[in-house]
Length: 413
Image: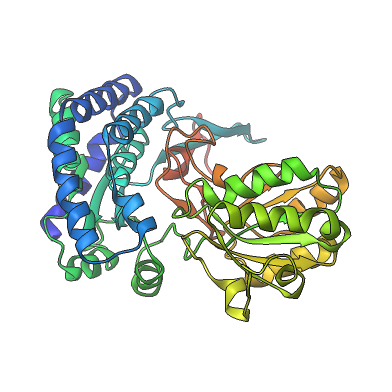
């Protein structure tokens, strides 16, 4: 593991100097190699999926793990999409002159070596590798045992792209074991060779990373996301947004877990929204008002307001206006993604200003909480902390800055 860290550090120094054209060429080669390895990758994924199914994991978990030809092609296309993003390395954030004639520029530079620890999402192998390459970093990937075979097959294709482009293979390294001790070594920093950790997985994994890491972490613990339907919401718009936010893909971190409905429109909107969700196959855990709507609604408990279901289940509550909705979200939410549906611009602005989350939407589905949808090409994760990066972590967020000072012989008195 320490040798892996040393190799990644050497590769990071080399990658920081690679031109944008060479990096884009490598991304094209990596995407091509994935497309050419479709049968091998899908065969490995089939074995991983069957093992997970035999272990009795939830359907949403199996959905995150599963690949088919269409999803694999989407992975290749997401790598290509990253070539269209402006290269962040070397870009000038700002520049100014001092009275003494010194010119100072704040310039973007790579972070160095990024460690990515993930579970059940084989697409993370490619997304993380591509974004780290684009931003001039090296990456050490540690997939979970559930997706290990698939990740190894994808990694093999990515390294073929690096070789074709004559870039160091250690720029995209994969931990050669599923032993949990390897995670602990990464969290300790591999003798100073890892600069930041990105966990992608369940609550227990992220909690361990946040507790044990001795290097900075980009992470979110949970995705307890809300949709608030305001009294000034258009019902048809609300129905479309709520259904998409919850049911498009229930197992992703941007899926809505709680629906809040303004009491001002509960008489016209609540029943329609609740029955729509029930008819779509979603279980509803509701408050007293929601229980009156349909016999299929079960009573919500205090735990429901703070649960990330990652399944076809939603908690529903009637609240007394936008202030109560904001208070509920800030108390029970995970600072990930929350949405308001309303035609009242002032109420929307208040919601977006006062909800303390990384992503706050107006009249849009929470499932837009995704780097690709933000125009980042892909994402390495969603960060809910307040340091350095917040929200989708793309290529630009995988850089830091350096101050470059240009003088003409100045000395300080």
